[in-house]
Length: 140
Length: 176
Image 1 (cartoon, one colour):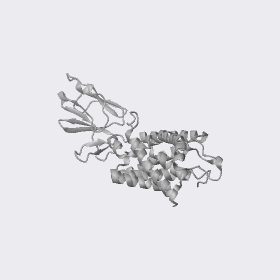
Image 2 (cartoon, rainbow over the protein chains, first blue to last red):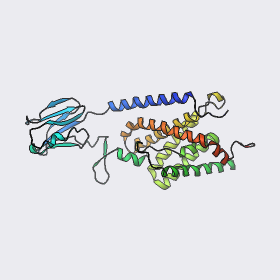
Image 3 (cartoon, each protein chain N blue to C red):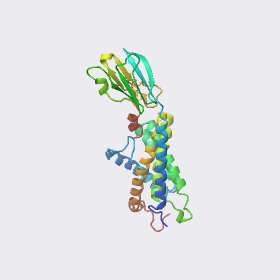
Image 4 (cartoon, chains in turn cyan, yellow):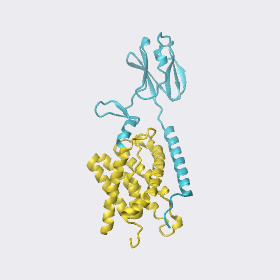
């Protein structure tokens, strides 16, 4: 008898694989390390906060500014500055992202961790390159 | 190796290179995740595995890695080798049940899906040790793309069977 094209076992295999993929996806999304955010005044880090805990607070010495941390992201919730550019920047969460309130010379930034597995340094520029970019090349 | 087997293996190897080139001509699907490939030349490896022999299928995988070494370099070649050996290895194991009892034979789709997924996982081993550990998080994507690509290559193999049998003179009377 010839080998068959398909039968019920294939469906079972596909369902099992989809379940495995789903479970692995959940596992990896839970394992993400809690990142931190630096609050920088005049280029100096004045405070480092963890993004793992949802909270709304004012940075040290700036009662007129409120920052909000929600779901591992941080943003300027409000500020008394005229242009509101910092508030309009919205949430940031990825390493290297920042939002700046220029009138207060205050900046929030997610530090780029050199040991972080989210990115790797570019061989030429030394700048962090997200790994997604090299997938296309190495899986050719 | 008999002359006939040797010739068939050589022709299939050439065909698998052509398949890889054909695949190169198809523009990448817009919704496909980065790095995911169709794996058309897997059709030929599967054909070799089912109708020529397990050692010949392994040989084609190794030769293909050699070809990639000449054309695209060491890392690409290692990826091709690890993916090819893992894929052929798993398909060879899965082709054992049913060798004596036909009703236990696994189907083309079952084998091609398993082969495609293990091709991806085999490559991941090299990526893990040589490039970055963070690619482990890519496994779910690799499994799902393996299912899709396995369905496509398995179906194509099934459709191409008559043509391949005809070209390679397999299934005729007085033939091994």
